[in-house]
Image (cartoon, rainbow, N blue to C red):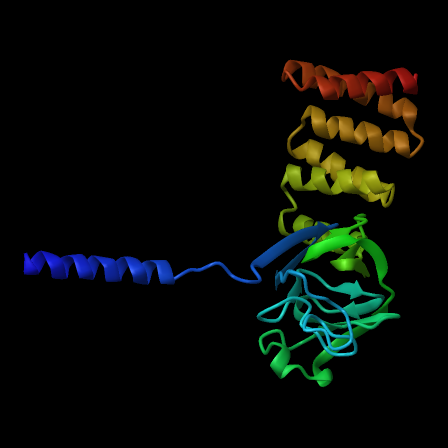
Length: 280
């Protein structure tokens, strides 16, 4: 019996230790990822809640006015970008940064700092890579601090800090066209005999309406390597864009035949048939 009692105590101790390994955080951690164009942004932060307290007030226990704030809770909030980007108009190299801010009644200073591991205690202005003045805007009351992205385009977005009755938007931008063209050129240089790579590159150029002669050459090479309804149809569209509609029409008809033989999606069939009606 005594032996069973000690076994019971041992099991209880193990259970207690296991439970103690994780308890609810007062300010739970969160990670948000957002792609802008071909650039991936990742924000990692902890989310404090008001719980009846005041934020952004003079002497407030939560983000007091005029003082550097970690823009969240616990460890430093971080912003990571896969490519170079602009932050409030300032050019920032790709990488990981701490996101700090200084709340004020008229405007905020939002900061990117190189020391993302040190936290608020190790903050030094000498490590700042950007300081942006932002005017906050009114927002429906938010109990829990939130960071998100809004107003997305291929080249820009707003990084938005939201808490209490305020939202603080910071404009971020990326040179998506230059980054995409660089990636295309690298991919074609690495796989010059891959018809899919050539087709993808030519499709992008067609969509942007730029370097169409280069796109046509890529489409031709893709067809030469492996003819499909997709690259033949692509060439027809490029020719039409170049004003060579008479040359485009027979290619579109050929693409239709190749697609029907391959039981292609009805979407593409309708697309080609509609184009042929318009081009005639």
